[in-house]
Image (tube, rainbow, N blue to C red; front, side):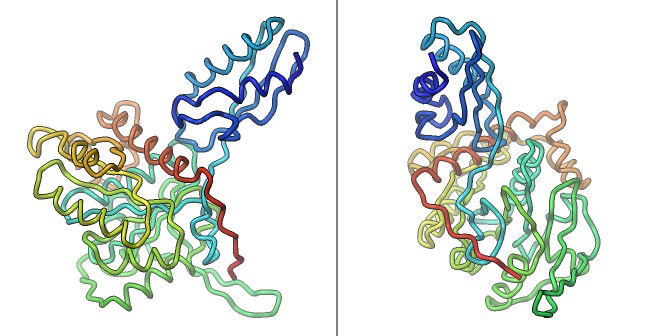
Length: 354
């Protein structure tokens, strides 16, 4: 049997994670046959596809059943992060911009945003983290980065001088925050127009480079920032963070309503600080009622606070971390929801920015 015939058979496999055929998902790139050996090249849509073994088993079984003379099947995986080019209309070379929000403060939204960014980077993606929580910029502390961003100067072919802000580096993660530009004890007292201006600067005038994901830590509540983002970007979606108790869930519902009103797709809900103190399972139940995905829960564990206080939130992905598996599951679910939302959506045209 030829490679093209085997490819047709393999493309009929229903992906065990995305629940669509590999043909629909355009994941089978090439099949080569030499004698009794078949080599199948598969392109995964995200670094956070963690079920490769299950997919490989299905592909091998299908190839062998399709051609009785094939004794050896080799599956090669490559990764090409898919995205809607979220920042294309303002010139950002970012495939997916994901907002992380909450209905109220104190639920660990910034911790989840930082953990999501570091988790995607841990899996091999190119990631940036934007701290848009200008009234309480905690990302610099949790990421363990300090200093003033450098301002880069470019000269265009027409002789025009262009200035760009260079984000700080946190072990390979690009980070930008108002916290780099003010003293730690300085209060930010701004009205809506100033928020819009600084957010525009952080997005359009920052040298983010090419990214698979840009995670934005939103201010708590339902204020101006969400509206600004919806107007500037075609966001890949929003993650809503909540703790399990009823009073927090009431505000989370408002956050979901806000994202729906500004046409930002809700990727799902995360239950943070899950355990005896605040209870468990409340977010999963509410997500089911609202018909939005439940992305997972983070147990209330001292290591999360300790690592965050020490500026080492990225080390929560170390092999001995008690919350590692919980966080990886959330990272996987967020990335896969982005891919699911992309199906049948046209890509946004990419514009050039000076």
